[in-house]
Image 1 (cartoon, rainbow, N blue to C red):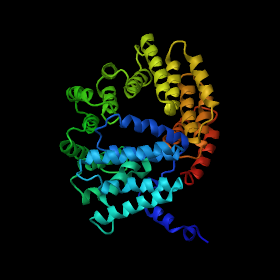
Image 2: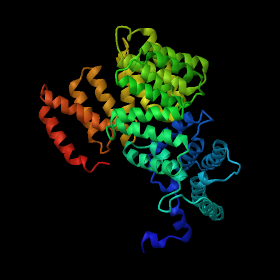
Image 3: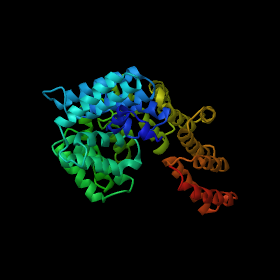
Image 4: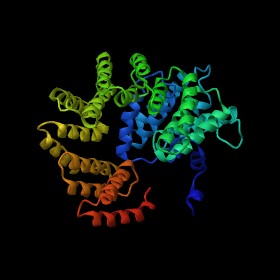
Length: 445
């Protein structure tokens, strides 16, 4: 008997729901934990227009981590968040279809079938009361939430995200935040080289900015695109910085993106000053401590000059990174790698950097994290230890892990450049290795 035929009527109804439990979100445990940190930084701003969607996703992630009481709490907060942001006269509306579906699934997994059935009935009632404007398509609220959710996970779903937002907007064009997120999805797709021209993207961002002037993250992205065209954006960026500093602290405030604009197009030192000023205003906000730490990392590692080895700057960077590691227990791997690389740039820090890397190499990591670590260690060996042979070895180890990612692609590109320059006796080995990886690439997800 097939799995479909062996399902109970309730299980068939649950499978037919549109919610996080049926959207194929399969993430490793380490990735789920990192998302708890990421989502917590977003909801620092209780006025966020995606508040209900954020809590829904947090509920699902906590369920996947086995934290069912927390999951139930977040699903309840999601319903409250939707009511708060929609400012609806009624406690119920079509925006709750996904939330009720999530709750039906959660109660089912907890063996609470009566409660699960009650939420299935609520979904049916909402679908009857608020049918989709198009019989062939899902309700726009579902498309919007599905798009926003998938937007958080994988660069390979961006075309789907854009399509879902476009369907939602076509049926319900008055939702400004959907249009804004649609534009950002297009921008991210453009950055990956997938769609559109720079002029088209710039015009779409300009229009979205006019429609949603209070969205400072969008304003930062507009300045970033202007700067890429070669325009001088210093005055506008400094004015925008004043507004961002007044914004509630959140990863959606535009602060991190603005700091990157300052770093690339204005001044690395001004970026640090801006981040430090924000932290001075909100000294207990962990997200701002993370932003300041990032600025010091960028300054020391990527924007090096004679001042980059200044002991006070490196000491400040080390203190911040240690603090951020303790504040982000589920996202500490990247910060530990960053800290090792900062130590490597200090006058007497190579020994400490190597010790940190060896501890990480000996730790129990999932394949994707190990791939990232190998890629970073390979670069550290090349640029800081001047060990070309060891660097090639670890770029190969990164590429060997059968998981498509930026780090695998980057290691392969580095190996290709080494082979093309033909300056090492390992070129034959590299060529053979790359040929093997080319055969395997089509089978890697």
